Image (cartoon, rainbow, N blue to C red; front, side, top):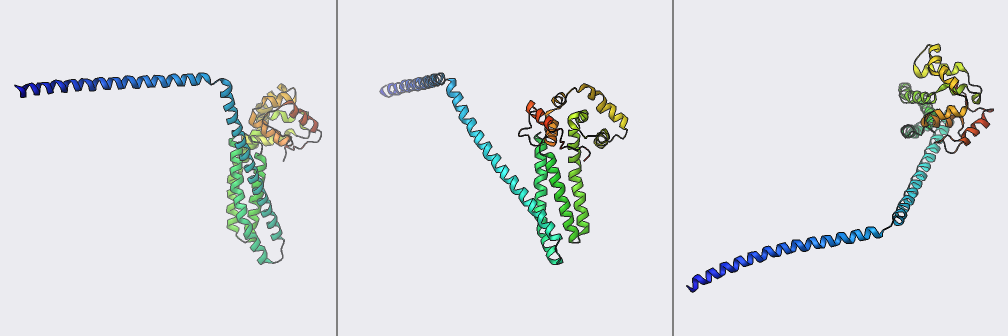
Length: 291
């Protein structure tokens, strides 16, 4: 009987222990929730203590850091631009000197040395043009095209001097493949609305020149049709040079201003100061559309 009673007592004690364990787990859960609620309350208290002034102050600090980083990036980019331009100019000048030398061996040696920097310049300015175009700036598009053209011409002359005629022809073909679509895009951008070029602010621009360029851009040979579709309607709707420029989208506006008023500092917005600057220079036009 003692043994049986002891077994029963142990069973009861085991059941009591299981209940205690369950109660303990429940308490732990409740305590955990209490701690979580307490923490959440502290967070809410902290958020309520942080006013908008603190948030704005933090944002200003972040904005300042971003501006500093952008300025640093812009400075680095400008240094790279100046470096590449200097190397390109130097290579072209060396090529010019080499081609004037009387010694054929010296000529060939120097000419061989300038091909590499010319190739580097081609890759750099091609990427620079694409970047300027894709970002929608189109302020430096013409300059990059012109530099690329000069580089290709110089490289071709170098290969001719080395009597690498097939290579010269190959490089010319590659130059046409790279330059032609970019030139067409750029000229098409300038002629988003060609009627404004007939305004008195663009003295010296001939209608025949505009129609020739439109033929190039549109691949349409009928000049009467070109005039009716692209000029006739718009020309009578343009009362002033301001209304014309204001009607043009930002990208072609940037390209046009970069062409006719390159001394303007900022060309992303066509303001009254830009128009006045343009007006003041119209008696000495920088822009010859025929070229």
